[in-house]
Image (cartoon, rainbow, N blue to C red; front, side, top):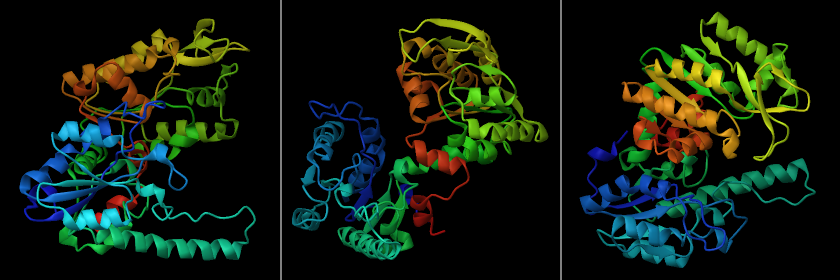
Length: 420
């Protein structure tokens, strides 16, 4: 597999899949967070500095056909400011403008194509009527697969080199993230710097962790994290559980959880995970106390109880002081740390203290030499909100992709380049 740092793009035209799926202001349609755009700069600048030119492809949102509110036009001024140069724009990724502008690109020039998801072929999902037979569905899927390949082939024809640097969509078998690689020789397809750094960070944690290795799993549901937790139980020394999923474990163990979130059909699963942790000699940490509210509201009345003694009519929305102290101590004495998911309802200020405390504990451990990997929207938001992004080892740009990779799954966007 070709490495981008070893490739010379002089006189070459590259087509690069980036992840510019950025948040936009609902009124002004301006970019409100340019993190993902900045994440692509190393790859873009490498190609330009070598004396090559490049075509950028991305999606934005989940449009149903061509929808102006999902246009990539708002990305242009941000990208131009970050690069300090003009960026050309094709108003249709498969249209005449894209074909002509791609063909006319000169060394040092950069072209951004309009949202690739304006075409259903990108995702490869046929648009079906409400009433459809199984046979019709099968035929529609087969036809869409052909059209998806045709889209990938046309886009591949714009350039000599294919670079995938969109880690956030690497778990999707889409035209621009996976299928396109088939139209380039092994020596002419590669990952960008962002994907390479993501893979290096995850492999460091999964394959070569320093001990003790602590994984912190938060979020609402056990069912969302089951495969990840099971994979980690073979690797970690400590597993910390927080967030809404806490109460499924506590109820499974016979505790009182009031109105707290609970997956009733996952109680046996929670007990099974507790047993597996014991078998594998993994120290499992669950909250010992809980910040409870009388309603799901930032203005709710609150009280702290033992985590397994939440009163009727109340619901646990964050970890409390004893748990923060215990979890922080475990984290600060760890050498490798993986964090995915909040400790409470982080979006409400009153219930964000636990998540913020975990973020600070991870930063403190990192300052003492630990390697820390952060992934998942709320975990990343907590790191950024507290200005700690440069105080941890790595902040992943891909929530779903990171989860699936850490679960041990093969990601289509990765295997397509590697040729696995």
